Image 1: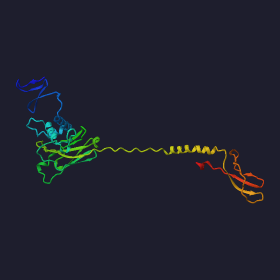
Image 2: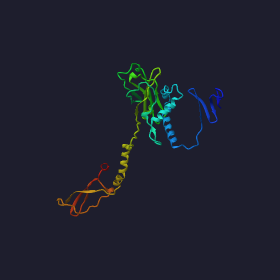
Image 3: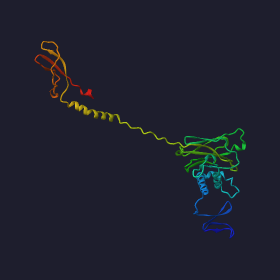
Image 4: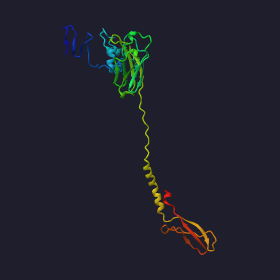
Length: 307
């Protein structure tokens, strides 16, 4: 329900039907609420898309732009946030619908008449961002004590880090800690300067970007079997061969020499059958043919040499 604070012909506060009345910067404002059932025209689609891109960027850093555009809208009925949206939608969005995106290098987070930062740069040191800027030799005395305002954004993430009263301009640098979990994220940084009493502020300057660091997947290393397991496997493979050798019914025989009954050496031309393993002996086995005598020596190969 709306209320009339200034009589019948004054503005009202609250809601009446689909109308909402309120006071903005001393001015009575009435607007309608609700959703339009009309299909969006191509121009409205483009405008809505650009509004969303800018709002997604500015909404997490409201504290910074509130101070950054405060002096810009002072004495007017405009709002600091609307002023920031209006500028960035016009100058800091690149590309065409539906592929438009934020151009972070052209974004403006503060507007004023104070001297801007000269040659600002950033670098990541551990879990901190170090801002640096040039300090000219001819820097006016009244600007030496200006305070730096620092803003760090993480595109694609609603988290942000800022400092509204950092080092003096004459110091030339300031280090700002960030959340360790965001060290590998993409970083966009901005810097402004403001008078110690807040009576003047500078335009913001894009201090630099740090690209997102992608995690490199470690290659999978094939795990080798322990040495003990390999040894067991080797023994397991050899064991059947050993059993086959041990279970053989016969063993090899070799002829050491052949000697005739008259004492002269002569080759043995008679075939000698292998000796069964059960009757094998380490002693020489004598076979006495009618004419020739032969001495046969049986040799066994030790199992250890086979393994």
